[in-house]
Length: 125
Image 1: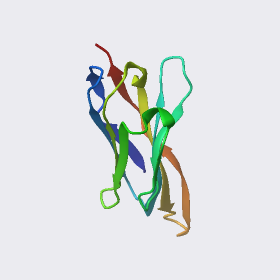
Image 2: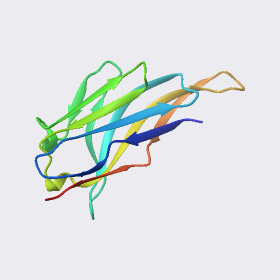
Image 3: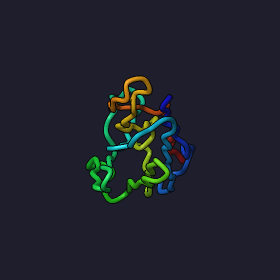
Image 4: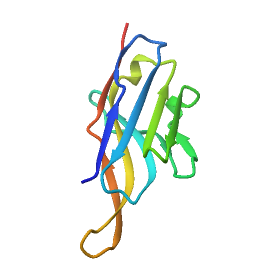
């Protein structure tokens, strides 16, 4: 059973910082691309930042220079450091990861996207 568990959300004033974590657990062969998405009130889910297994990162234009994504491959965890937060950053933040597992019966490897349950980030004065 593969799970992604997010933590680190909360409420902060404009200009403040938060650090989100996303930990993968279960019978995992490898964790490939990892990413953070968010869905604000009345909005569609959008990509915030993503990172490859080799550490190459890309960001939405709205967060460039303020957010930083990183990962610890040994711990199967990704992080999203969010600085200079704005009210428009308020959203539920979701972690996504492409995870490869090995079938216990046949021994085949297969991969798919897994999502975390989401963590609320509220930026308000």
